[in-house]
Image (cartoon, rainbow, N blue to C red; front, side, top):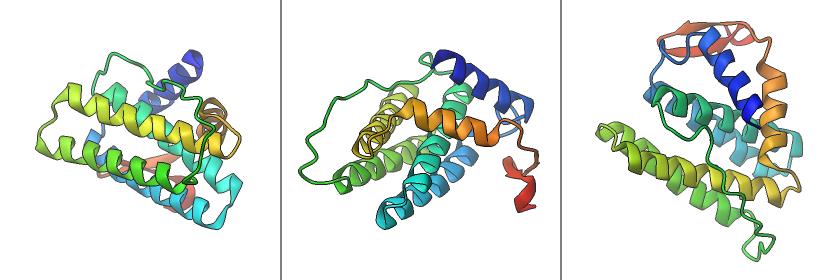
Length: 165
């Protein structure tokens, strides 16, 4: 997992996402990908879920690097196989955590609190992954395989893949 994170950080550096973008711009991408995750959950499309989980985690990794957070990635794997409320409870909590991340970024960033909220979001992603009988490492690897050779262009601090230009 550590090497995978380092590979993602290098990928982001190579595309100037660490210094040429901001956490606020990455937040926009994170909200976009979280929306795709919600759509995948709503339609029960596993590949969309796996892809968007991984994409969310890639963006979290980039944000952590931009903000110089000490932890590379902060999943405290929860072995929570009791999903009486279904995955909806994890989606709702992830959305709350995501809102808290956005709120901290807009207020000027209490780094400790921001890291807690980002960790909370990542942990919810872990629970969502477990619900679909996968894990965050698999999702992150899936996303990295998709992006590792991706070309694109930085537009106003946001990396836009070649196919979307």
